[in-house]
Image: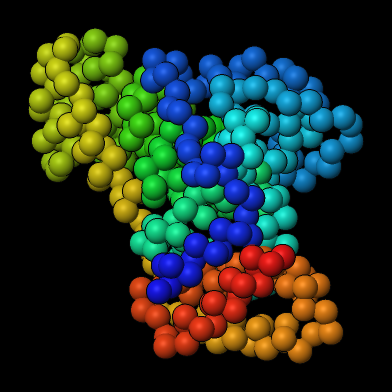
Length: 338
C-alpha cells in the first residue's frame, strides 16, 4: 500500500519529459573526465573565485557552458547550480524543493535515504541528486554535493557521480574525496581517467588502495617491469591476490579494478534508517499544525521541504510504525495539490 501511495509523491516534483526518468548516457571511457572541463576552465576561473566557490554571489549575466552532458554556470558558479540533466530536459526537480526544511533534521535523515530499498524513494532521490537544487538548510554545500554523488553511486550511476564531483572540484584538496572520485571512475570503467587523477596527485600515502593504483597505472601504461616491482610491495590481501593476474601487457585488469573498488568499502558505506518512529512523530506534529493553519495551501508551501524529507525518511526506514500509511497519505495529498 505504501509503495502504491508513493506514486502520488512524485507530484511534488516536475514530471519527466517522457513520463520516465532517464539517466545521462555514459561518457566515452576513452576520454578522460578532466579533458571535459578544460574548454570552460578559463572562462570559469576568470569569472569567479574558485577558492570561495560556494559563497560567491552571482554578479553578472548567466551563460551556459556545455561540459559534455553537464551544464553549469560560467559566472559565479555555485555548487547547487550544477545539473546533470541535459539542457533541454524537463525531468529535473524544482530548485526550491527543500525550502522550509528543518535544519536539525537534514543531517539525521538525508544520509539515511542513500541506498533506500523503497523504489519510489529511490526514484525521487535520484531525480533530486541529478538536479540543480538549492542546498538544504543544515548541510554544508560541499557535503550536499557528496550526498548527491553517493545517491547516484548507490544506484550505480557511477559516471554521473564522478562527473558531479569533478565539476564541483571536490577532491582537489582532500585525499578522501579524491579517492571517492577515482573509485567512481573505476566503477564506471574509466580506468584511464582514474590513472590520470592518481598520477596528477602523486604519492598520496601508503594505503593499499593507492599502492594498488600505482600498479594499475603501470599496467595501463604497459610497463610490466614496474608492475612486477610495485606488485611485490603490496601488502597481503585481496588487492595483492588480484594483482598476481596482471602478469602480461594484455592481461584483463577488470578483476584487479574490482578488488580495488571492493576493498575501499566506499560503495558499501550505507547506513539506512532503522526505525521511523521519531520521524513519524515529527511528521504527525507538522500535519496537525498545517491542519490548524488558516491557509492550508500556504502552510504546505512554507513547509514543503520538511514534509518531503520526513515523508521520504518514514518510507525509507527498514521498520515502519503502524500509523505510517495514514500519516504519509495526508502529506502526499497536500504535496500533490501544491
